Length: 218
Ligand code: SAH
Image (cartoon, rainbow, N blue to C red; front, side, top):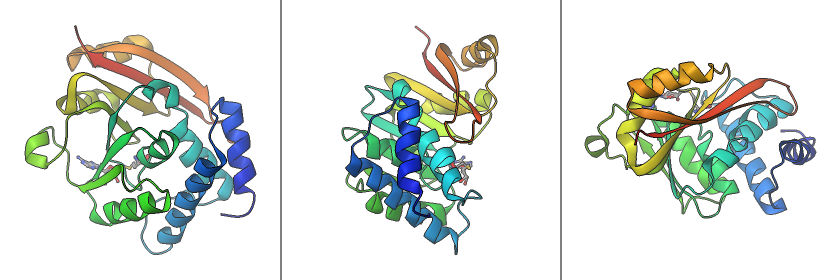
């Protein structure tokens, strides 16, 4: 990334209302630099322009911080290069994160990215195909299941439910955000309930985003 990255990151976080230490911001940028370095050899992301990496990878991942407050162990399904799990672990020092991807070279990068981001002690990257059988797959049941750009929301909720510990919640990150009634219907089909739905725009690109939270029907 070029030298505009630190100011783009701090300005974007400010616009988002997120406050992060200078150290955490530096570790986010170190992770993103490593991602672009690997990307020259291993295809990990189509987004390579500095302003877009900051906006669409780092800030987009951190935009869901309000929704994940209080979580202790996050499971990021289809994490790819570690998004949103690694930025979230960098931002929240008390959070453990398990990141899963079906492609082994992505898992290799996630391990290095976690080291560069200074979170390797709390981030575990697992090479597995998530199919809803956590024990067989060696995956945990957690209090927060999240994913970005992984599956349509209906099938994702069906899958995510299998990885929820009692009292846990599912967070979905979306580009196009269905109306609340549609999300509630998908939730009901998976035995879940819609807790909240929020839409916003990314601070630099202005791209629309949405985030919804679900929990087990009581
Ligand atoms: N979350 C990342 C990557 C999204 S691409 C981001 O937002 O940038 C979707 C990823 O899901 C791919 O890396 C793909 O390998 C992975 N994937 C697809 N199906 C999967 C499954 N059943 N289990 C684990 N990973 C899967």
